[in-house]
Image 1: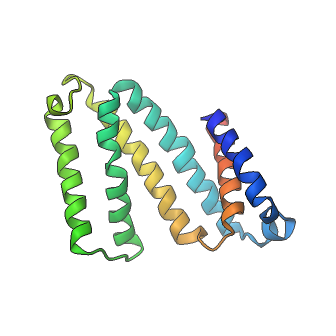
Image 2 (image 1 turned 135 degrees about the vertical axis):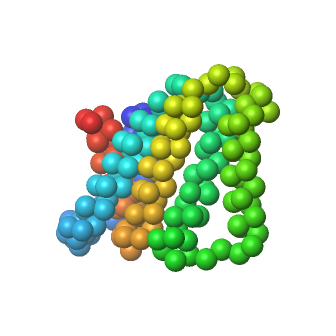
Length: 166
C-alpha cells in the first residue's frame, strides 16, 4: 500500500500542485477536515486492513466475487443517504450481482475456490468494502466541492500515514 500510494502522490503532484496553496488549504473548513479524516480512516485503515485480512483468509476468486458488492453497497447507500434514484436496469443489475455473490458464497465450487474457506474471511472482505463505500459516500456528500487535486493529495497522504501509524 505504501509504495502504491507514494507513486500515486508522485503522479498526482505534478498535475495538481497548483491547487496546494495556503489559500486553498485555509478555505477547507474544520468540518471538511473532520470528514476527510473520517473518510481516510474508513478507506485506508478499516478498508485496507479488513481487505488484507479477508484476502489472507480466502482465495483470489472469493475476493473477486465479494468485491462486486462494493458497487451495490454504494448504490444502496447513495439511494438511502443521498436520495439518489436509479432506473430499472440499474436495480436489476444490482440484484443479479447480489445473487451472484450469494451463490458464490453458498456454492463455492461454482467459482472454483475451496468450500472450507472461512466465513470470517468473507466477513472481512465485506467489512473492507463497507469502509470504502462509506468513505466514498462521505466524499460525495461533504467533500465534492473541494478542488479535486487538493482532496486527492490530502486524502492519499493522510490515509497512508494513518494506515502505517494505526
